[in-house]
Image 1 (cartoon, rainbow, N blue to C red):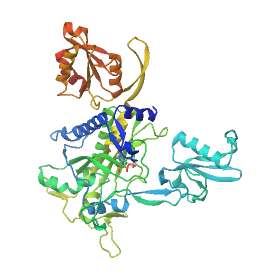
Image 2 (image 1 turned 180 degrees about the vertical axis):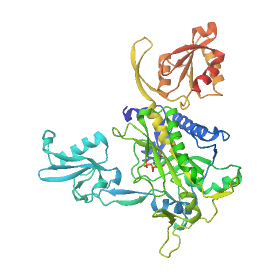
Image 3 (image 1 turned 120 degrees about the horizontal axis):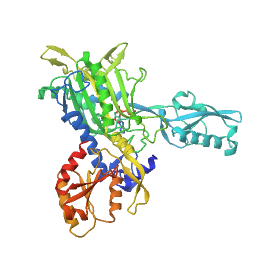
Image 4 (image 1 turned 90 degrees about the vertical axis):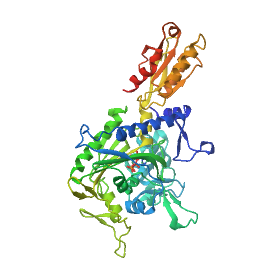
Length: 536
Ligand code: ATP
């Protein structure tokens, strides 16, 4: 599937718009239109239902080490600045950027690739911001231009090795930047903190600087004690939160995949250190299965365990759930969710202060005066188990998902083209969104076959009966075939048509979006039929 087709459909049918589009848009910000908002709500609600409200703490779910509890939280976006100092975000949450002195373009260091080319006795590194085949094509064009060769002289170019990251290059003097014609225009990489700054209060001095949260997780850690003290929950316990996060990404791109404002769905799962390895495996596998159950294809979804070199210094294990988005190069995958075994790093940071690794230990980082660099809250965030009489700082497993990335993956997966017979039985191409019924923005559309003979009245009655239960759509305009296609294109699983036979025997036609199968149902049973079919 070409991404352009999906992007066009999303705009045309009101799934996604560029933010502030009438002013030319703002890079990295996206708005959800009337159908997009329903789709994303369904993603969030499926997650909240499956992870939080449906969790039965009296039974051991399949594959889980024991019973456990789940509860939720909704924290503020702006928190005390010390939260981000102790969590490490203030010092460490950065990417490296490079600038082009010539074009003034800015790039994320690790996203620039290139390959070595030699011609006319000169060897240069040709850089590009593209990936996969597009990167090969772009570097070829750039090298030909640089060496003043024509396309048919391409064999005079010698390529030395495959595409590699710019991070493998030490000396930039022979690098041809992604958008320039000159060598050596790229600056050395510099750190760029991704947190958005803001000022709290009317005085507005630097001391009042606060940050828009770059993740929802910290709100859960700092409320851990409040949750324990105010409810009768016991460990193992998961606390879930869905909410906006903000990252000033250097190069937002690939539709909503990398945005500057996005929504996360995060769980912090607190457990006894002796059991944390088992819980890590449980959550990793359970979260992977969640995406499969909602329709992502198994051959496009991978669970990738991080290598020891990739792990953050505090992490005892991390696995990414990754999807083969259509904008990725062949064989490459993009992160949908990270599931991480974080040990006791987070709670200890908020007790003691920002931690750093010293050998096998995590210790409080000191400043030049030998005092904690970023002081913790000093509050006791340990858990006391009144059954075993044990007191301990729990370990944490963190499944951290992006609501927008998940929504984008479901949109990509749903986009389908096929050929079906039209009104006259002639094959014609159709585009339909094969959403899982739980995610479809509209569950059923109701049509009178024609706008006469009492059909609209019956159709409106059915529509009125469905509306309190399911998102539905009423349409009496145009040929019925066209109405079907319009619903297919927004992924409505079922169309219900009131036709001549309805007036005779009180049944209506149900039509399935994917199989086009049609069957008859008594008009008063429509809600029940939908309930049965949508609960797959
Ligand atoms: P990436 O490496 O792609 O920048 P990350 O590893 O920094 O992602 P996490 O910090 O683990 O991401 O965040 C958890 C989840 O939040 C990600 O798996 C993703 O679904 C979502 N997410 C993170 N950054 C963005 C973003 N800029 N736009 C949309 N979603 C995001």
